[in-house]
Image (cartoon, rainbow, N blue to C red; front, side):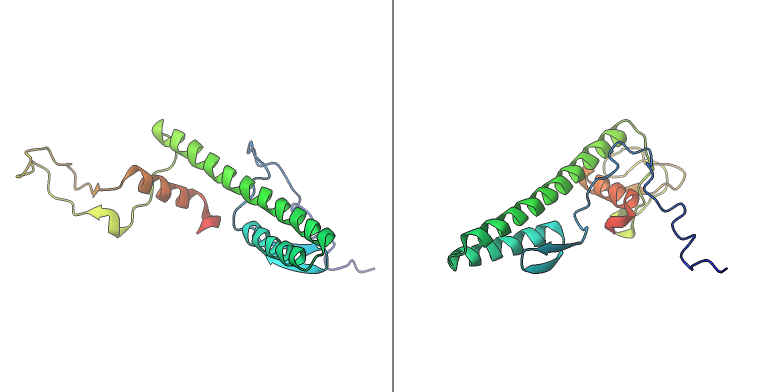
Length: 159
């Protein structure tokens, strides 16, 4: 007897811990399908929060207090999801900055816009400072730009 096509599809696709301390960290760009009272909405948490607040405002203006309260509760739920995503992103930035200050982690990929022309080894004629030897490229990035580049390189979902 023949097995259904999707009989083996579920193998290895379950939720497994990846060794992360935060296994279900929300993402700001996660799209949700919300089945609210009387309406089905789609969007990220911030968009759904705004949509439900607008619906609550309209229902309250029409004198439908119970419907307005239901929409307000849905809006609050998506507000909390959005705040959790923001907090998780901030925590990742702090952890990443700590790793970089300890000298660990991967090296950032540098684009052409942030690279200053490399000059031969020796002394700079204007400042008298030693220049890097071995044809190394000099990079002029602020700490914030460096952190952002490294974060983008480590988090392919945000690109």
